[in-house]
Image 1 (cartoon, rainbow, N blue to C red):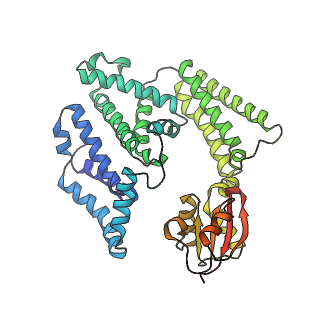
Image 2: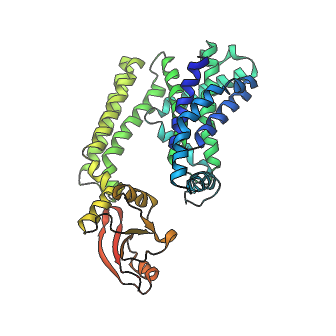
Length: 384
């Protein structure tokens, strides 16, 4: 692919990603292409990507929204670019501190249920890339260097995986979604590996089948885990049987039908898991994780929008979610202080005394609790 079509293909996703996540999107693109050019020892690769019409297309798609928001909200540049990009990367201000190795299990979890083949594909591609870098690509293992296209694509995909992983591992703030850009190249590597797979080896298919069975078991116990409750009587045995049957079915289908049935065999438990989570378990997930349920509880307590609401010692997900569902600003005691007007504050379970300390002489009364998310609601009187 070359010329205009290549630029249209590459700049549309980068522009959309910039609208969604900000300057980190073009930053990642520059780092990935630059690292690949260094690996190939061909600076021209990077220079050829700097095509002026491509930049015009990128700015035409991404810039108008940023300009419009900056005009409407003058503090946007400081809040978005400085605080939510630079400070989020370089400081622990947003309290998302995790160990350096945090993204390794996150990445492996993000490739489920194909994790076994993703790992195998990365190992194979790493060996091939090393052979190619040393100049002996014709002797690369597994015959993966049979074409120059594959030989050039594998190092690029490996770099595409590595750059987000390393960059965000260095960051002081870490959230699982940050390394989503590393998942598509992993999927491409795994797809290429599976296309070259000649037979269904027990060595690879057994752990893959166990992962599929584990996904079914995990989905079945998820509602109880979310509610911090034990499984009903006899449910543990049923979960174990379901996981074992799924594992056996996947393994049997692939060993008898070969790699051509791998996709169908894997799709079967995935559909079961998604169907269970989206239907029978949906109510529990909504109660435990969604701010929508918190808003509904507020409305039942007689606190409809635009009644003032604040939060105290709760996850920021609650604050942001309520901001969306109530279409109104949600104040945070730790950041904004107490509103002067009478208001409802949502606090972590057992925070009555802490709220009274913060409220000082103002009257504080309990309105109720929301056990699924371990929250309590308090009415705080207006300032004297």
